[in-house]
Amino acid sequence: MQTQNAGIIGAGMAVPDRILTNAALAATVDTSDDWIVSRTGIRERRICSPEESCSTLGAVAARRALESACVAAQEVDLIICATATGDHLWPSTACLIQQKIGATRAAAFDLGAACSGFAYGLETGCGFIRSGGMKRVLVVGVDTLSKQVDWTDRSTCVLFGDGAGAAVLGPCGDGEGVLASCLGADGNGFDLIKLELGGTKNPITAESLADKGQYLMMRGAEVYRFAVRIMVEACETALCRAGLTFSDVDLFIPHQANLRIIEAASQRMGLPEEKVFTNVAKYGNTSAASIPMALTEAIAAGRVQRGSVLVFVGFGAGLTWGANVIRWSQDELSSPAAP
Ligand code: UT7
Image (cartoon, rainbow, N blue to C red):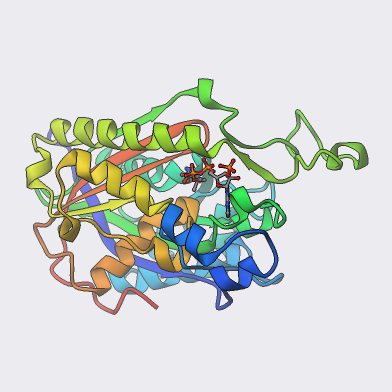
């Protein structure tokens, strides 16, 4: 029996209105616009208001993605929400998004693979369609790390921002859609990026709060080295599974963590600047949201056409990584996908 191909048929994004510039940050911690731009390429990031959360941003991105795919919320079979900063430990943020958009027929679950969450979610969602069981899957990548960073720690607070991106998946023709993926994990790197408190192993208590374990902690330089290596390896493996090479890639859409990481990895892949999409300058590292946000902006900028070969790659806490190779299957999305 021939397997049904699956791919992205719509995309959308949402970010909070509040912009936090490097200059504004430099007024509160010992840093400078110069340091942040030269080490990361980040110029500003978006920060949630107290009323905003993963479910509110995720629902807006989801509605925009559905609109661009001309799919009604009631047609959605499954919602996968990739997030590390969900509204609650449980129930899932996917259920809150389901309720907010009125996707009454959809099953819903969260997927925890940190910044690799969208790459994991895309392959997982396609699997449900390939198996013949589902027709419309919504994958939302959303994170609000501004609520988990220590705003007095200059080594992390300058890096992250809030945002959501979403993609609608559906069946597509032969040789189109998600052609191959490479997903991986290495729990030996568990300590390199983590949130120590708040789970069942280390619940939050008055005493434990004194050690600041409620905040994101990262060993940046080690993550940097891992990231450059794994991006190249994961993309190479996924391309090889698709029967393609780096020279076939039309647009590379990597996780937007740090411009230097993206440049180092793309150089190793032999990809020229014009084939690499970046928007890290505007949003910082939005974790699971960064790839679908970048995809949405790339579509809006006219950089994705039917037949284009796209490569996504994410990496992050776990450690986890994931790459997807896509042959774009849509002629034109029905409405502008970016806000
Ligand atoms: O989504 C996946 C998760 N994370 C990542 O992808 C992050 C990966 N890592 C990185 O992007 C980089 O390692 C960082 C941007 C986090 C740091 O850049 P770096 O070039 O590795 O700097 P460093 O950590 O080696 O620090 C160099 C210096 C240190 O000072 P000394 O010890 O040399 O005197 C830091 O204290 O820069 C200092 N520093 C800062 N200075 C001004 C660290 N943060 C800042 C800051 N402003 N914000």
